[in-house]
Image (cartoon, rainbow, N blue to C red; front, side, top):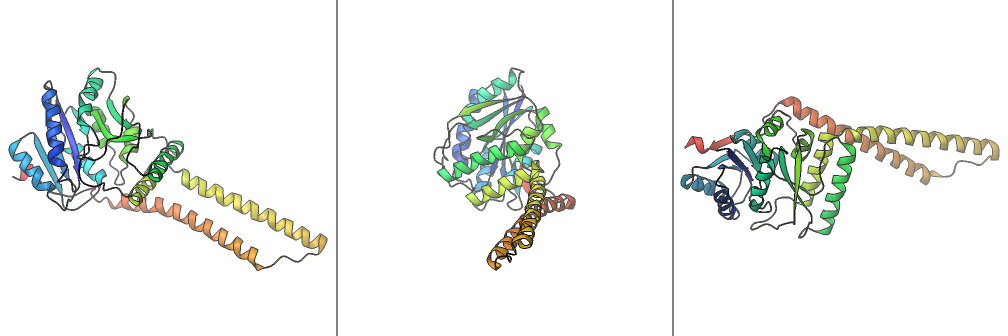
Length: 311
């Protein structure tokens, strides 16, 4: 039979993990026409996540685990899981059950039909999220789709089932600064979107604060678009043109009407405005330069402390 690998990045999920395991094994029992392996990636958790993963492995040899030396982030967790997966099909899921395991049979049926290479999920609602967070999330999807070539669907989750060929294509992208939502769209392959109503966490608390999501969105834009650099250049050109027109206007006004140039407040405002624009431009260039700097270091995306093989 074909092998289906389920990759589950975990960070402080000791409350959710037993519930998730119960749900996913029930689905695996239902899908008796395919073999399963479950790969739990412990992203430097500070609770008992790793201990629970070890206990699950002891009782079920389909369970595998990878433990990082520290917290490297969800992107690193997904990459480690994809690299370790042996399956003909690979699924990525969260342990908090916001990605319903009950969708896996439909996703597998979609891919097994031969028409699609990937079955991905998207939320049709954001029930349970603060309205301001939902607003900025929708704005992010609109902005990044206009700025980049990557196809990122509004409400898209990392929860997806992929053929091995698509997984290998993702792994061939060896960049240090990873933005998986963009990578999934950039590699192409035919994807079917499966919609579902938002599900709240079964236990524990979200690890994604508004500030972390904001930083993540900036990283996504920088990783898949150079538009901010062009916008910075265009803004600089427009401001220079406006300054030249103003200078000509005041020079003609002084020569024709003999009016002196009016006070310092306007001058101070102009200087502060131009200074702010310059800092924005330097900041944009700095973000791209910092990403280049990190790429050239060739540091590993993650460091593994232990796996089930060490037993």
